Length: 446
Image 1: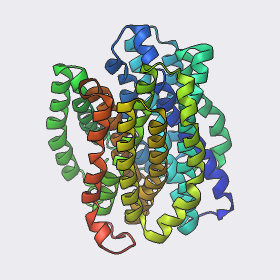
Image 2 (image 1 turned 90 degrees about the horizontal axis):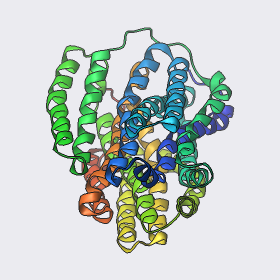
Image 3 (image 1 turned 120 degrees about the horizontal axis):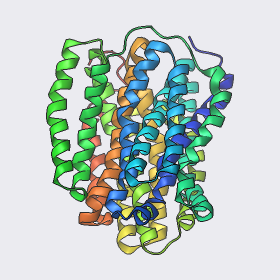
Image 4 (image 1 turned 90 degrees about the vertical axis):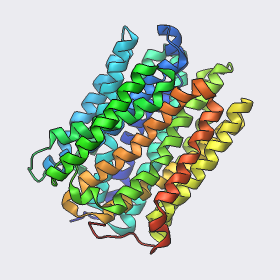
């Protein structure tokens, strides 16, 4: 049952703000990466792990929150997630060594993962039709706007207080949660969580990111990533077959709309995170101050607030699949523009690339969630959104890992060119939806 739609603006804005603060854990920290490397005496590629590990944990634990919300409701997991995000941010600010900083970022990412899945679950549970589309678009827009403010906020805070204060910025999420609390559901199905299934999925996803990051971190990381993927993939498949109603419900895994929508849309956060890491790295390396990088990206924040006015209507009119496809094409162009800007060390071209990927994110993320929500039954909607968001955010961790791993080997410009191929692969994955009806398939099994 849905609530009256007159509170959709307030709820979606609050969720977008909380989502944006979680995203700021990457965007504000990105401008501090060169300073972290200098302070702890590590290489730039190694320091990028502070972003990649955060994005990785954001990805691999997001489906856990989605499944838990199906079982116990949204209030408790969101409270736990916000608490972990805050604790990780404080620990990162106080970290005495680089190793402790990485652990803190893992904790912070594991907590922040509650926000994307549970945020869209709230909106999908409370609203329907065009109201839901507008609410999802508004959430994505506000989240992107706040995330785009991250480099400026991080630059100003770093200039005044140092990089450690930048790490503490997500603590502000504690202010939002009490205001949002009445809109959160407390009831769930009461079923048990398939913990082993969750661990297998998390380890397999981690292996993918380790493989991508390995060019700058050595053979040991490559071997670890390869083992995780080689062992985790068949183990996960076996677990799904033996536990069809477990962590990855068989009806979700077999749902072609869910799988294809998430896989195609994952190219958008890959571009987003790549530019969040790559743009500050290029410009700070060229002598820019972090706050100057933030000013360059400020127009992206304003643009992100405008996109939801049109994204929801476009998704409702043309269908989620076409919206995801447009977001993918825009992401490819954005990465190519940014690659040219990185090669020329051109601030305007890099800023234009971020502007374009901001539009792509503002369209692609709500389009994916709308497609997935419409394709499954309500009793598995939370986990379906969690799985889709996991794939979506794994794309983000891959994007940052490519910059950190291949950027040192190929150069950031060529790493961006390589990433530009990913959205084109997404179009191929989505071909069935693009050549079929405008509306998504609603059958739970495809």
